[in-house]
Image: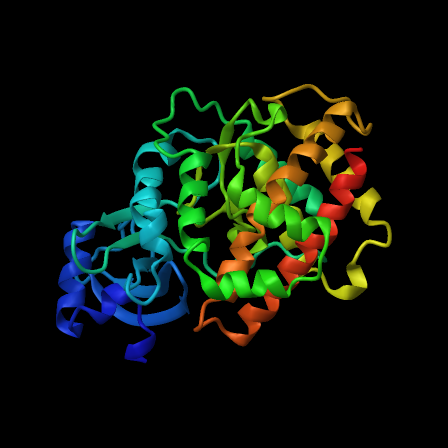
Length: 349
């Protein structure tokens, strides 16, 4: 069990874990049980079952919290390259309190210069990620349009899409396995665009209005409570909404059972963009239910940003310790990127 604990908890002896959490939460805490959830490329996650010795039953603390801690950068450098922990900590302290969006409550932050850092955040319980047979794509698009509609002028957002791209380029250009996977791709316009995206990332004219974007918006990071709670904020920045949309539609296609794949992919994409536009209120007005020119402009912008987003599955597929299920998922995402690119190119011409 110890080898599966979050990095932060592995660095603490059983006796010091209670003191560590008590100091962070400013109340005496006893950790009754530790439930490892996952070990990721950016962070390790565990659920702590806690109690307050001597509590009179009036505590505002929950019975469980989530510990999300950084992993060893020598093992997985992605988090260090993107400065993901500091970015997510800044999100919870400076940005989340100003949002009307549903995001997890952050109970405490343990930010260390050396050694593992950790976030103590709200446990969303047994809430499952939206599934296609429970929640349609349209509901997720409404959550995404709400995110993109946030007024960013008053927010202390210190990252933009250019910094994300710069970090991605530094990883990709030094990642021989990722380029080997790229070279194995069948020749196509998409393959050419994937490489071109790393060399030319100036926003197109349709990207002139930037907004708050998540950069990893997919079903795994959209949970059911409160009508849709967005988690995992280690990549957020200001940037074009087209990036989030392209990434979400590609990962949605990859997540769908084959029996639920749309028969007419062009129609599915256009319907999704029209619904997104109809529920957005910050960039342009679109008449609900009609595919206005803005939807086609958005398709063109997505076609530009999707090849760059495709380097995420390429980079993760090149990671040695990726699980079999993870490898299958990111292969499906890469294949979905290819299919979606063809559709977007067709719609925008």
